[in-house]
Length: 296
Image 1 (cartoon, rainbow, N blue to C red):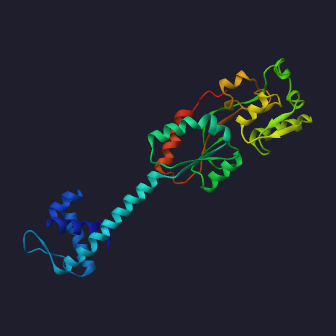
Image 2 (cartoon, rainbow, N blue to C red):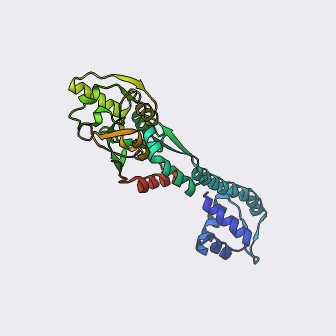
């Protein structure tokens, strides 16, 4: 017994006509007849009295009809509710705090305008946590700075991710061109927490140069770091995208592209994972709004 057979039977009973049922279902009249006959064979009863015109339900047919109508209504309602639930989310996007604040914000604003009923959840995580979240399926998509070769994820490049030195205005590091990262290691450093991607890269370079360095303060965001640096408490290294035009009234900035890797940030997704329509929509929007944005 198949749903299409039940549907053909119910619509034929509703209109008391096989031809009208075929028109309603947009299928051929012989197909409706075949469906009804198959149902009759499976149930071992006659569903219609075909002697009269228009056709009438038999007593058995009337009983089956009364049982089938709410069943089909429930299945159709289930389908509609499932679609509605998927269309409302939630959609979970994860990335690092600096990308959320300085890059993702306009995307979220535009997405909420286009899809006001979707529950969008943005998670602030370390780069490793973003990768792990996508791999586990907990996160629909993430934005990270470069994908390692061993990570079996889809990666769609977006924008260049350059690192810079920030220091108070008129700091001695800003007076002459940098010749080495060891020049920075001489000064107190204010950095993100241990394990953050840029800090990890910087500390690896310091170790290669065999220089001592002193991290005097760990803060949770580049925005907090910028405020402490502007007060003359130390210098920092962070992503160029976190430096706004207004910041340069109090801070000096120097590109470290000659000393630290310039990565390309991109969207990561899990191969084979089912992507809902709302999730696909924000991935497409991120691609269109952030692709090749000049962040250097």
